[in-house]
Length: 72
Image (tube, rainbow, N blue to C red; front, side, top):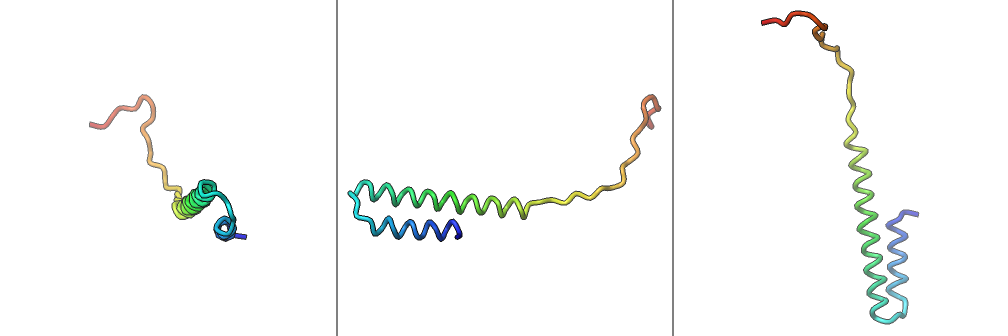
């Protein structure tokens, strides 16, 4: 089951539960915070997958050896 689907089911349970007002609001807010965290995490993992850079090996430039004279 998808985490978002699980949160939707949990949200429906919270809406149907008979609780004192303060506890009910706290549970609804907790579900909202979880939903935000999961969606941000999902977006971050998608960004990581799409931001993968492929580096190709290029021919190395010839570097001056130690003790050689510099060109002017």
